[in-house]
Image (tube, rainbow, N blue to C red; front, side, top):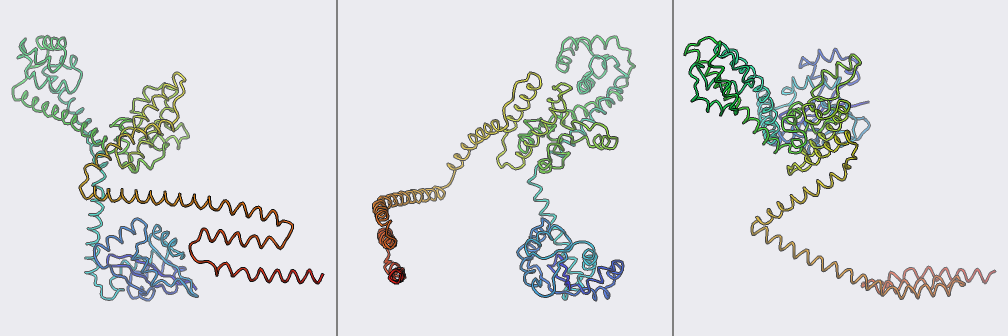
Length: 546
């Protein structure tokens, strides 16, 4: 007979329910689904075995965090040890809704765990009728407990995410991409709008941001003169191009424009220029964030491409968990699945194509260098994710390795081994961290100084004790050398006589014990002498009889 117990986690506490007639329930799943909805039928299926209410909201939050991470909390362990029948004729089976916590409970208690099927349906009924099955718990109190725990759990998760500043990188790179699209669209609108008045300017100045600044500066082309040549040179940074703009304005075929239209064009071009300036500030902000969060990845592949990889993966932790083969084609998922569907060639690279290394490689080596670069990106992201002190030393070394691999493909020069490069990087990091540690120690307070002095005294005394012990051991060894030699001589002389062996062994042992031990061990030595004398007498009797 199998006895099924179902563990139910509620905001109010842990509950353990005993399920009746589990064989019939397992066979009749549709009937279980119907009977779950009515409290009368469901009461006949399950009965409350034990209930453990949480003492405080903090305790409930700790237990829920442990369950979400698949860890057995001390409260849950005590509750199950107390109430779950682990020993007896009936074999106990524990039903759990989550397989992750079920695996942890199986390791902890070595009990068979059941998830899914009947347990899922019973859990649905328990969730629906929990306040009716537990005495003293009302529906209003249960809903309040759920609401409070939900708020505290979400608040704790949000607080945890504040420290993960890679979210700011994800948002800034998304905004940077959107700004690029918007600035391009708005610049084309300014070109088209101002082109009615001064169409020749488009051929002279092809750059979008520079065109918007010139449209804001020139205004009415008929007002351009030799005096405005210096201001044009400041914007264009070329005297010949400024002179060409001036000459084109004099012989332009554009239509005349009213002042009100010109004011609107200037306002719109001013907005586009301000957006372009904000984009530069945002790029600088992204560069500073990447140097704080992922300095090695930024040093290896660049700030923008590294931020795109982090954004596409979802977080730096997710990127660190990816293998190099996934990082290589990250961003080319459509091409990959299309190739798998049509049985064509799979893509060689995804987002890492925008790095300079793949562009510099030859056509036949693009796949090889992308695979190597993805490998180094994976190493750099893992170092950035799990290292406590941010440093770009590893990224610079990895970038040097990629450069060496590029030259190896072109010239055949053998690159350095990864082990040697990482050893050099570790030496540099240790040399950089050591001055910081010493500076932190110097900034310690007087209490820390006194504690370090006490620890130093303790270390000195311990060293002295060790030296004394070593000296004592050496003296003992020297003292024991002489008895050992005597013992060997006695054994050599008494090799012919069988009875003499035991006699020589006992005094040697006695001498060793007297020199090494300070305690009185005479009774311990006298005990083995009596059986030795009895054995001698027996041997003598046998020899006399023969």
